[in-house]
Image 1 (cartoon, rainbow, N blue to C red):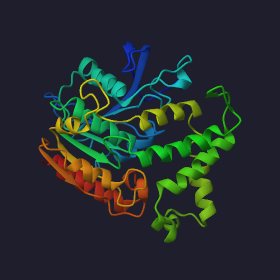
Image 2 (image 1 turned 45 degrees about the vertical axis):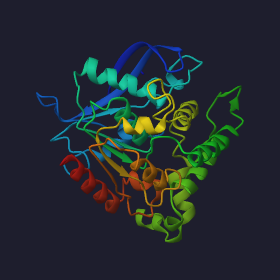
Image 3 (image 1 turned 90 degrees about the vertical axis):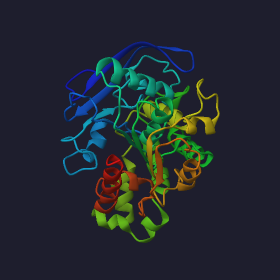
Length: 338
């Protein structure tokens, strides 16, 4: 974690993890946008997704964006394992098993100890960020006023788990994977992982209707090569495996507070809840959100707004997709108006 950087580091010291292991000098990288009001009541927490760092997700922040920094103080905490916060790539081996619960515990300390924040106007997250948003609402119900879970769920569904097994298998089939870790960059593994992801992340309709042409690609192969073949090569492979582990073990009830009681964990949530699955998302299936909706019995409000898009999982991260961006912006504006 050296060199020029556009983010800050919160050193949490030696942290006792959910597993009971001690993580020495755990570090959380974060960046803030906008101005905190004197009442400290305009805070939006925006956790990162799989393989993403804050710079990859800040496109959504802007005066005309989904999250407006002229009105809100937006904080992006980088998830453990993403290469900026404590990760296999910047931590002496062996890297311990960490969970969403561990990540939220350190994020909570950042907010309360360093930034003096005790209330969150909104927790907004896509994919793994959405799973973190769900964890926040269950673990700190008095602190979270609203949550927007975009293409995410309260726990990793079995089908989602299997998808991630295919991702791991593609990556670790590379000969660079030896003795449980990558000794060098898995060039073939990165490409194989990207090709697996290309099939799962987008929908049947996306490929049938050749929607990749809207982004300027001239053939299907051009799209696959330029969008997916190198998309994961920018990240350390051991970091990716660590984040896959966090994702697969994700479950808001898997902690001492709820002892595996999923209904009790969802019933602990008091926030205004906005669940926005992708209508064609193949691994965060909207049926999981439908099931969760009926269990949010103590939420101030709970609505399900599927994103009407053929962009699959990526409908929740519509960087170059104005239609889906407009949908997210309108729904979040309505949520913040509550």
